[in-house]
Image 1 (cartoon, rainbow, N blue to C red):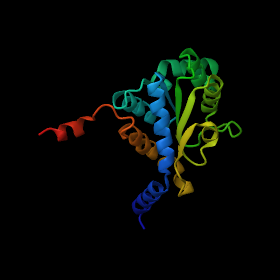
Image 2 (image 1 turned 90 degrees about the vertical axis):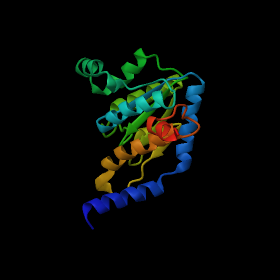
Image 3 (image 1 turned 30 degrees about the vertical axis):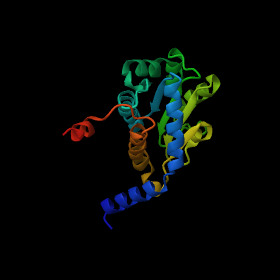
Amino acid sequence: MSYSAQHLKETAEIVAKINPADCEKCVAELRAVREHGGRLFMLGVGGSAANASHAVNDFRKIAGIETYAPTDNVSELTARTNDEGWASVFVEWLRVSKLNSKDCLFILSVGGGNVEKNVSPNLVAALQLAKQVGARIIGIVGKDGGYTARVADACVIIPTVNANNVTPHSEAFQAVVWHLFVSHPDLKVNQTKWESVAAKP
């Protein structure tokens, strides 16, 4: 079997194993945030940060939810990293944004954060603040979900079908799953361009 065939086979296996009920629970949480006038904060590192930026667009434009990603502000992110350290960049950004009980943290991460292994401690600190202020937490994470899965109100864990491909599949499926969310009839409030064009006579 070629690597391409193997990778696509793994992709199909993951699709079959994702729990639709977990997706529905996330959608319900997101809808509640919008109905209560809350904000959505997308947190991700590395490839997940790029996904967070894309997701901000989709949740604002398609789902009508006020959404932000701290990583979109490179100046503040690098200033805080330089002056205060990487582990606190998200939590301090969220403090300035006055994260509150109406809001929701949306974590995109391969590992979900693990303080003991010093993996994404910045996500863990942000999640701890969310718990303190009563903000909702949802996530799309890989592996066992790490700290995110332990504290989230709703979470989709991308199943591991090949331990050597955890990162590419986790980051790829973040996009698959959040696109499911914004396309869901309970969240979608604005038509996407190509679908609206195709619908015209």
